[in-house]
Image 1 (cartoon, rainbow, N blue to C red):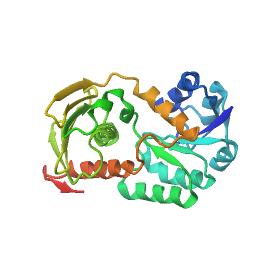
Image 2: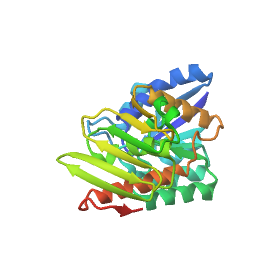
Image 3: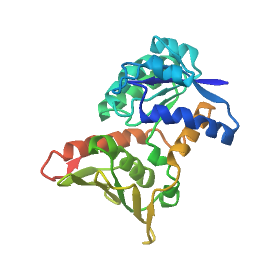
Image 4: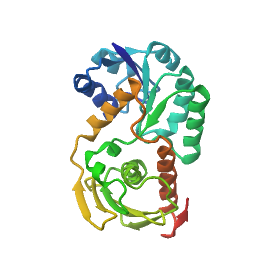
Length: 277
């Protein structure tokens, strides 16, 4: 059995609770044998659940330190999906062990911090990747290379949840965005990403479902609600990576994603002006 260690800000959260459950299905699909065996979290969950209680309920050993977890684990998942400001601190303790590591979305709070995590991984020769699960949506496969894209999506706030739409846009349009703009109407945002020769519009409202509309190079327009099991796809890619495969995309695109996100967050505070990236 290959042992996974969870490093989290607090453990009783949606990603930790579901990733551990879904591993059985991925193991059956791939013929692998991975399980979450160790966990460490910085604080108790907001609902009061302690690391020890969460681990006891799931048959996981609670570690006293991140270092203990890294020594005992074959590979590591840094979670804290709602607290990306913790990721650099955790990466500074995890990446020196050189074990394959997945870092959950949002990768970092800003572009500068993202570059520091990349530098740490390079310094220690540690393979890692990070992505939103939405990058793994099957509906995007046939749209890669489009010249224009509209995405929709929701969530409790733009700062945390726009990452999903940005990941979809970069999956389809690639790197090279030049400028961004954010237009606000009440609690809704239309965020524009201009590449020069291609463009994306990311439409956010708390209640919107995830969907994409793409105009292909030949002029065909395609609209797809995102209905595929993208979280299962993501966990499959994580396990393949832990098995030794390369990440399923160029990890440098994560820096592109972070640059666009930082630009959008800055732009939403401006008077609907274009901001160069």
